[in-house]
Length: 306
Image 1 (cartoon, helix red, strand yellow):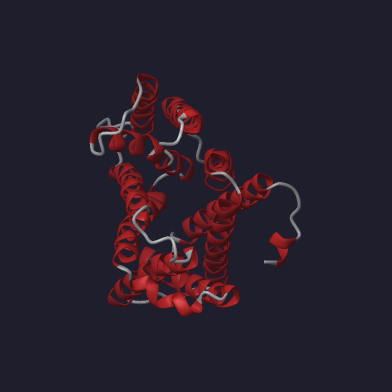
Image 2 (image 1 turned 90 degrees about the vertical axis):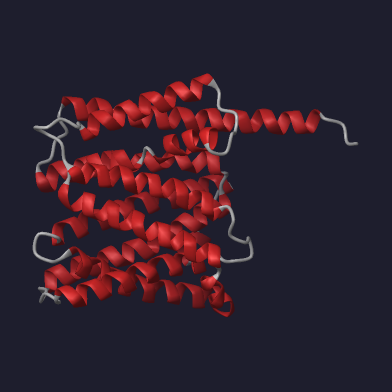
């Protein structure tokens, strides 16, 4: 918290710094978990990471004075959101453990495109032809990354797509959560539920002894998760959404760099084109959303009161 108090400048600047830091922390977390997976089962990694992250988040809740509201973690919309996020986390992590980190992150970043399609088809909201073209191009990019051909197809890539789809549903449910429920309580529910499920499965599978190096990697990943959530909350509280959301794509170059340096993963030509299409389409959709927001605000300001 002292770090944030020392930040100067506009709210948007502070939010951008916080969000960029969150992106870096989340990417480091994923890389560390992927490194440990070769020798430690996935459920054990998620359980241990979740336990340490839960303790850290409880400390954050105590420090911010939100502890009296901890009972709100059982609000039905909070529980529903966390259940969907649980599925998304499992799908994403399993995909991450079996496919290049850059590829699975690129697929995950197609969620804004999926959201645009959902609000148009399911919620009947107006979506212009420009955004529809961007959505189609973005989904073409997903196909290029997944490459559903018999000789190169990986079912784990479909889990990455499923994780992105779960994110869309999760974000729709988030809109129904009461504003008085602190973000830290929602985060605690997410992390705690994932920890309990993973711990149960890990104990059923059998706990594997870990080296100090493996434990340290998971512990650092857990602290990155907790700090990343804190930075994300700080970002959304101090900056405009349209300013910080596009910054999520900055994690992709870092993921690709880590994938190359640590695992020697280099996307092939088709996957590289697909990644560019996903990022470009996603940024364009976010840009159009910002313009529509400005137009709606200007129209509302010009409309005389009744």
